[in-house]
Length: 433
Ligand code: IMP
Image (cartoon, rainbow, N blue to C red):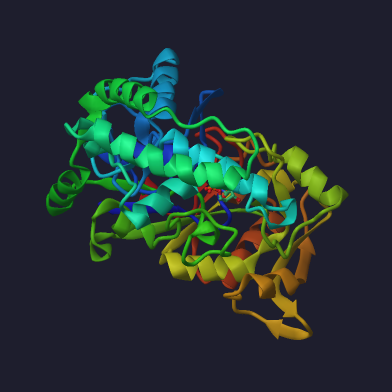
């Protein structure tokens, strides 16, 4: 399919990076269209581990044009570090990376605002963000007056703009600091620093919208890579415990400029269980030894922040909702191998919310917080799946589990991943041959 999208359907960390890397060989372009360095995508090639945060996971395939569009937010020093790290690992990053001049820039005032705001919250109310300045940058994008886009870094009034914004931000930060010691932002130093980054980034900058619209008209093969997951979507996720961009399928068009009707296929990626990092309700959470076992077996620690991920049973109510809201045509199930050794596995097929059985995903976070999972328990399997390469090799109980997920979500599973390496993948249809 010429325009294919890979979207996470849970709270992020679904192993989208692996799926994108796997499919990239078949595409001419791989596009990151929302989020920023809050994402961490891991790719394992021949046993060697690589991590990308903002650079599209297609970068590991020579000849693939990687694009970061205007829907993303960019912290230039982090991006430059990422490029340097990839190069030091022998990965080519040059004209194969294009960065939109429409993307918004994360400045020190964004990370500082996030830190100060977070310190004001009691821990239970904290969103538990990645502290990468993502929310404050998107806030300024929506507010417009204090926003600077990548293209603005090359305008003659940059110094003035930075001075103007830094003055306003200093007033705001001083007020929020409420008398505690506070180091004001130094507009001149920020200007010097960011002018340097602008020079380094210049060779990569372009109009990604035009390039993508031309490519779509020419029927070129484009793979869109979602970051985070649909349940973290600012509009359709578990608000306010979400990220600040449209991380469901809704973000593809707004973030890239490619109209929704030009997209051919959406692949929704789901772990064989659920995880969540940061705050917010999680009805199927296993805050017990079983949860610890899944965390250890799945190495469930954040790629970006190193935080332990909360683990729980597969939530089919949430998955069905996010597959629908993202327009998923089919599914990729990752980390199936992690469940090996459990005598039984459970799937949440409905919620009990204050005594009422509910099968629709609640729109209000308080209802989700009160939701008790109604679980269906099926037999587990006790064999190592990591060396299996085709669905025929899977034990019957693992296959039954997958079939049950398909039934609950109402979409076919086309890809199953049983380990981090490219090789540890099963394709359940011939369309990827
Ligand atoms: P932010 O995106 O840093 O503002 O964080 C908002 C929420 O989204 C927090 O709960 C984060 O832990 C979560 N989050 C952001 N990016 C990711 C990701 O790539 N994977 C998983 N969770 C994420």
